[in-house]
Image (tube, rainbow, N blue to C red; front, side, top):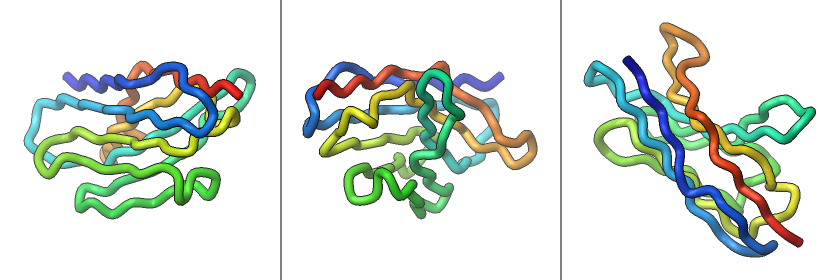
Length: 117
């Protein structure tokens, strides 16, 4: 049984900050890569940031220099610190626990982020 849950979304003004959290529970002791994606109505889900099991991070060009992905040293908990938010960052943000044996892995239910201008 796998459960992925996001939290921390909300409404913020342009230029503000939010921190999203993702906690994943899985019935083994493995450490997985984790990622944040986002989606707006009528558009495909897009990758925002990825962090490997070893802690290496990769970002979409649109968020480089503004967002920071991090994770706990133990377990499968990840964070997305979002700074200098723009209205175009408005979306539902989804956490992914990346399982190479069952690609892409396991999704959370999503958390809404709304940035007002």
